[in-house]
Image (cartoon, rainbow, N blue to C red; front, side, top):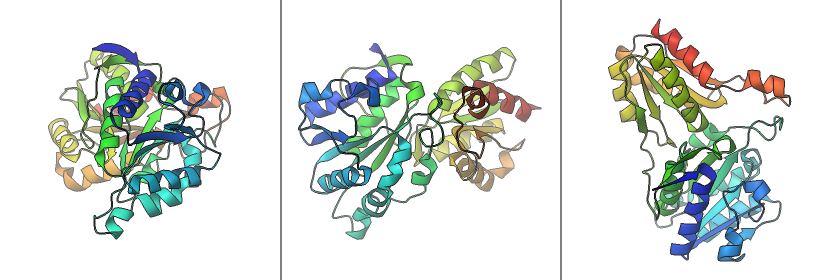
Length: 324
């Protein structure tokens, strides 16, 4: 077991998949450029050749559609979108084609494509470069959506996504790229649809996604010093999400705080809150709290960003309110 950064773990997963499976290839804008992908694709083109690591023209729709076609005939493409915002230009092939082909052909055709979308929030990038729109895709039947928060999961979920046989959106957050963690050598999978308990507790359940799962770890440490025993669940997959684990935890603690760094209306947090309220309402001792972004576009100002983005302090405040 070695310590790698989150970006290095993603890079290693790509490299090992390319090395062991000739059906795997990577395509997208900026895949030869470390500025676009951080270190998550560094020098893969030099190691495996530019026939398998393909830098594409600025056409998200065409690139994604071509990858979906390759998947249908047996390849295992990974499509790289350096900004999740611009992946909206590829909604038609993702939602109308990839998500539906297997159903339309009675399961005789699979679409084993991985669509890697990067959330690149902050840094005064503003409203068109900072959006977390995972809930839009989690809404669509036929798509799976994963959001790793740890280095271990960043590698294992990418391997699982490529091997899954269905279209999978793999969403990583640039704010996690420099975080370090232990990562095994070789290929291994983290099961899609399985959440992880990062800390057991009895007072309140915190369910968090992606970057907010990392922020929740810091929040839980502070809350423990204040005598509040938090059970922390890193959701890892948001479609499907681990209902059984979340329900059993809330049944134990009676309180639920959901942290998802996306807009509060119509998001993953709203889906989880509605499901818990509908299925195990009798277990709740306090109203469900959501720690999410306000329903406004991302600002282009460092000062406004500090007010706009949520983090550990917001989770702490929500938990303490739920405990009262």
